[in-house]
Length: 92
Image (tube, rainbow, N blue to C red; front, side, top):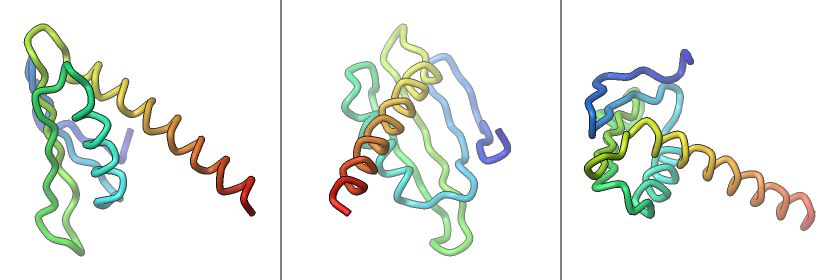
């Protein structure tokens, strides 16, 4: 994945950069992650609004791997996006 770069991968914490994205995807992903009871926190930061790349950190609760909750959240975001697109297509 060339648009995704892992900065730090620990047992309970994962930090990664999402290239070529902005607040939209990161905020949606953060929102889904924060609904997961296995997630202690999920945050992201963009150093510069025009040139910065979002850096996201996920911290999970004991015994839960951040990579697994990220995959689960990404699948949920994809599902919700597909459902939203379908609603728009039907309305138009």
